[in-house]
Length: 418
Image 1 (tube, rainbow, N blue to C red):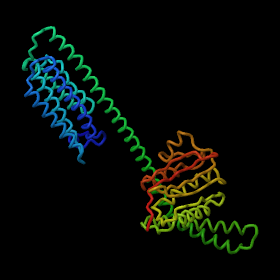
Image 2: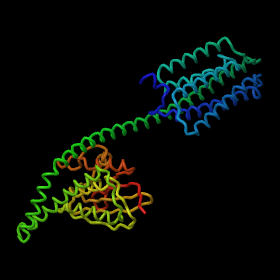
Image 3: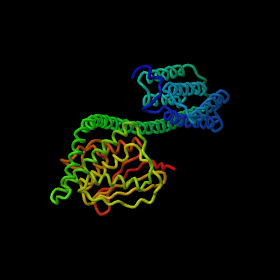
């Protein structure tokens, strides 16, 4: 990290969140000082300089209110701002210590609280600077302070010991509270960074795969045209042949399907907008195209209750085909497909009767490249589908299908067209 980043936004551990926690600590300490001052002055009859102490506490209260207002605004926070808050709190504690007995006041060790907070959340040089300032303040308070007058030495000793005990409780509680919350924030940040790294690795692999796919599609165009022409001629020539006529027609349909895939790929590359059609019609068309590619599979198309016009987002059809292919690979005779709107989201479900996924595989599904079919496939189907849905603001989830198998849920924002 370069020095220039000291005044930049804390992207990995938001300064706004740290300011909020620091505000809670400040308010707690402020309440403690007010209660302690009132107890000493009116309860123990110790003459306290109420005017200067009240002025400092009032400034701290105003500062706390200003911080609370600032946190309600949609404004970014910086590390330097957080450091300034720590120095302000440390200075306020030192001034309060000056008016209440200096280093003889057991609450003087509360100056360690900002130092501990800095040690948890700041770079070492700022921690050492804050520690040096705290040590300097303490050294000054050893010699420069306004003493408190307590006539009875027994009472003075009891007050000092009681103050030390209470100070220890307050310091330990505040430090424990802040540290545990900071640790929780750090764990959340680490999880977010790990997820981000995982997505970046997956996206890099998908981009590399997409580049190779584009090159392959370009190179396949010419031989595919030859295959399509030959398949058409064979289907025409052997139309009435009972042995190979049906095979020739199947070959022709498969060649036409491959040509359609390349055509749609080119249309997406040219950013050609999708036409709107009823949701049930779109789903039926996708199912029909998939059946041409997978004539060995038996697909059950469930009813679609919502028939509003739907313009499929770019990549959704291919994402759905990937899931259908995975389902057909594990159970060719038990694939089911249905889609419906649930509130403001479109939910597409693909179910199979395969062996299912282990809990570990469910957690990894779509996030990393792996195949749930050992020895079959490259493991990119779910990864591509997951990446597409993520780009569309959707999600992919896996559940167990009643009676055995897996149900894959594709959920994305539902934007029906007029």
